[in-house]
Structures are given as structure tokens and as C-alpha cells.
Length: 419
Image (cartoon, rainbow, N blue to C red; front, side, top):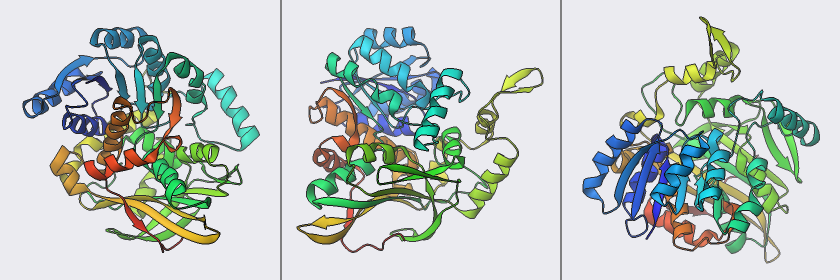
């Protein structure tokens, strides 16, 4: 039915590939492409005996536009799943336009070098005009809207869990539960434990840049920016228990705020242990979270990329991670003139994720929605050409697929609110 290239072979990509191979009626042929082709070959060898999906592999430098186009054309790809680094989003989108491929990723574009002069000038203007400090934002990818519309291609941005499923939950709540939504709190809890003194549950470079940056939330369409980890709350999560959580900026705030301007306040919280925060702040104080190159023994290195090499690879955490994730959205609003509260969320077992895919729950909760989103495009359920974030699309078939393929929703109509 379709030919799909997955770019990346880390934890999220591996889950996405495993799930695609469970549905050969949609994913007839799959090419796994990464800089390290040996990882692709090993995954193919593991999966091919147990799937009707025809798997091939390729070595690719996702910064090389010509190499991307050569691969896309030779494979005759219908769709590209970009499950690698968000630094590469724009060049892969360019290649999709050149080759006539649909596109999906799981995180908003951000530059690898935050001191690149052209990008930096635009960033500083945004900070001045909007008080919006995040290095990652959707503006660069939204500029591709007309190009994808004119090409008749579908481009889905941020189709993991958060961003991704959380936005589908907002669209679902507006469609089925509310006439108007007043407030939204997105809560991301990883209650998993592992034996390491310090490990990130997804790409360390992206994770640490995100958490250590200024936090932000939206009130009446305007950004409120506060210092990193300066707003803390406690919440009692199903399957996990009471956890400390901290306000962060997250990319779905920007997208939801643009699509649903009626929402008066949008906040995002993520849980962290005190040990995690202590380690991160020490590394930040030592300069190890810097993305700017420094000279070391006669050559340039980027400290946070060096640190990434020294930390446990999130793709190796599955066998030793226990517990649950709990991610969802709490709303207030009105239905039929009456005040209403609503909470929609998912709980995902790290152990069950590992049994199915060999990866822990954080990779699972991102990889499964990526597969489901691709399935929506390839089966025509999401077929409007252009560039879309998930809350703009029909949530029903997507959430039905999540329910069926590993991430079922739970609901509460009397949740404890976040103050």
C-alpha cells in the first residue's frame, strides 16, 4: 500500500519502526535510514523474520539535501518519518517537497548552533517582541504551508505524545466535551526508575537544553516567561503517586494557542526528581550544557554534545526501567452554559513497553503516535495538503488508533486541579 522511509534508528525511531512492522497492510515497504547503517541492519535482521513489511536499510547524512533526494527518489517513497534530530527538520522538509513525499516529525525545529547570525537576529527580535525565549518554535516550519499545499503534500509537525497526542486531546475535548475551553494544564509525569545516578529518558542534548531554558506559559494569547524551574507544584498521578512537577515551555503551547485562541491560559508541567535537578544544575553551572563550541586540546567541541556521549543512551534504558508514565491534559470550560472540568490522559508501563519493543515507555509514548500519525496520512484520514500541527486535525481516528495500538486514553470528570 505504501513505501515509507524512517530517518533515525534511536529509541523513538525503533519503537516507530517496530509498530509500523505490525501493520504491513499500511506499511508495505519500509527503509530504515541513519548515519550509522549498522544499527539499521541489526534492527532489520531482528524484525524481518516476523513481519510481512519488506524492510531495507540505507546510510544517510540527514544534513545532505542531495543525498536525501537521491534516497527518496530511488526508494520511491510515499512518506518520510523524521524520527531523528529536530535540527534536521527543515532540510528533510525541503527534500520531501523536491521528491513529492508526505512528511511527519515529532518535535519542532531548533538550530544546532544557536549563535548562527541570521537565526540569532530573528530569535532576538522574537524575544523582544513576544517575550518568547525558547530556542525551538514552529515559525520556521509554518512558513512551508503554501509550499506543501501547492505540492498537494501533507506535512504533520510534532506527532509524538507531547507534542502530538496532547494536542489531539485538546481537539477531542473541544469537539466532544466543551463548547468553550477556558484553561488547559498539560501534565507530563515519568514515574519510571532506573539504577543510574543521572540519565535522561530521551535524547540528552534535546532534553537538557529544554529543561534548563527559561520557562513560559500563555495567558490571553501573550507569553509569560519565568526562570527555569522557578514554578513548582505537586500532583498525585494515577499509577505513579505524588510527584514534584515544574512549569516548562513546550512547543504545543505555541500551536494550541494559535489554533484555539479562546483558551485563556495554557501551561505545561513536567515531573523531575530532586536528584535530577541537582545533577542538571551542577552540569549547567560547570558549562556542560552550553551549545557554543569551545576549544579543547586544539579542536572545537560542543560541551552538551560531549556530555551526551558520556550519559546513558536512552535507547538502552528499557531493560532497567520500571514504573509508569502518565501524560495528559486537564481542562476547565463550559458546556451547555455550565462550568465543567475534564481530564484526559494515558498511563504507559515501562515494563510492558520493553516487552513489546525492547524500549522504555518514554520512547514508546513518542514512537507509537508517530506510527499512528503516519497511518492517518497513508490511509487518507488526514489528507488535507499543507503543514499541520496535530490539534488542527480530526482527533477521532487518531485517538481510536492510539486506543487500539498501545496508548489507550483514560478520562476523569472531577479531576484535582493544579493551582
